[in-house]
Length: 111
Length: 111
Length: 111
Image: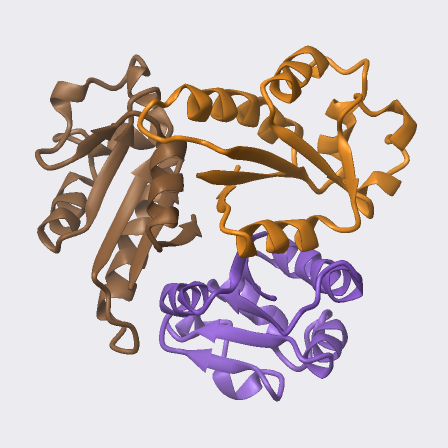
């Protein structure tokens, strides 16, 4: 199965780290793919290499979760694409990506 | 592709105006249909012809987005169906409409 | 049709009681199944047999709605599985259940 999480706030980021771990640890569902779409600058700031959550988010990337950033939101002054963790993908729009993934059969979970 | 936005607060209304524009401007997804379901009186008030956001919401209607109002929520004292922008549709329930549209293949995005 | 509600806060619990009723009363959609997944301790506390909302939630169970509790969240100190209303199901993870149900064709509604 496939799941995409929709993440907007710094609190959402903390929760999504736990949710992805719960999902990957849940032996009753066989996951092929897990992704998270970050659509606001305040959440995207946590994807900077020097953020407090960088270690946890690197772990998620290492476990195969896809972390995707909305290009529109990445224009936020506090965010610079070049500072993002290696492996984070910038997408043309968060809502476009959420639409495309659900169209491919992903379940959607809003934090 | 098709997407329905779920809108409950006045802040959600401001965000959905931007999200629908981002989605329609995203050339990586080909959109057949975009809708927004308003399920609380405080959000529905923005669909009055004299609201601050009436101009933006008229633009969305003009671009083909469907704006749908939950009849249960439209009973809110601040809302009168006759004051709604032309083109807004009243549906028998917001959750019923969200169910029906997802059943038809719409992706769902919660503001 | 089938719908799953995602419930996290005490306020969400109050709203979901009304939403499930609206959905079951909406003659324009024929519902085969309605479920609600509770994924935080503060919402799960409302599923205790002595909570303020116990009567409403018992009514929903009586109308056939499935109420499901995330085992991870049920470890919250204020929650004890043995105190839950009869008929509430404990699932191995809330996100796993939300994924499985959407994979089976349920529409998803985030409170």
